[in-house]
Length: 321
Image (cartoon, rainbow, N blue to C red; front, side, top):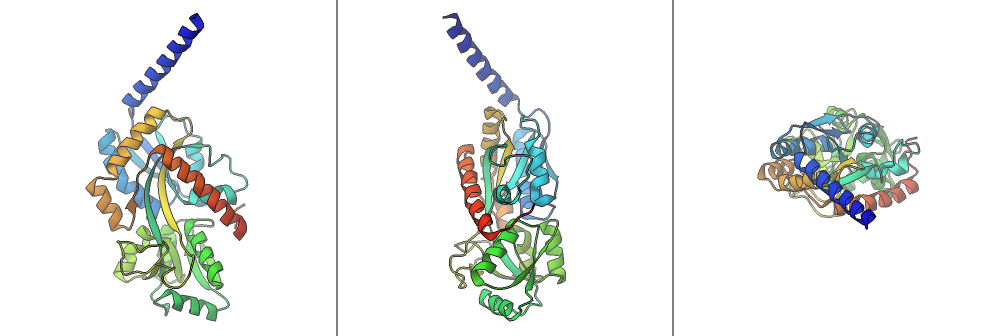
């Protein structure tokens, strides 16, 4: 009897402590790690969300760019951070590719994090430098086939969404292309605008403004349906490349072991923020659609993405180390 009462008291104490921790959170600024340079899709989504979260939580949400190794540097920092809710990781779809491409990760992507919420989804936009004499996907394929040395395409790094999206396109169309990886999407776009490289399958938020200004030419989006952000731009599949589809998503992760009460508090405020007109309009203006989810749903989705892309990466033979 005494043991049962003691156990019950311990459970009540733990629950009471958990509630108190969640109620007092946050008591200081929260760092949101972004594994990519400023100007990319992940950075845009994070900075659209941070001001509203700062207002809702009453503490500064600090967007902290830690680019390098296709986001792995930031992920490693987050995985090793104290599980107290004060270090979060802005997670793009790239992180679903990592387990299959990195043989020597110091952490397990599937178990090192607690899912908080899905944030947004966006197509990738196929853009070319205006000097390239193509205005459609069929013309791009025809030109690529006429150049056995290969058209140069940019990406924000080996194994990133732009790299895999282009390799999927290349494998389906059987065209030759030369990969030019950069240290971040921003640097890749700068050289694409300058004409040092010729094309890119880039996240829509990062290149849509340049396509609208005429500095780049948009050919297609990579999703099954057209995007409201660029309704006149066809999909890759629409343009004749059957069975082609890819989207980029963004979510928020916390270190594994972060108290459930803190995860729920963050999830609640994030889902409110994703419905706020300022956040919606800012994301949609950049071509990203706010998503939102429960922690459980995002966790299931993330696990499914890891399984899906593990098969794709293994079949393609892409390796980082």
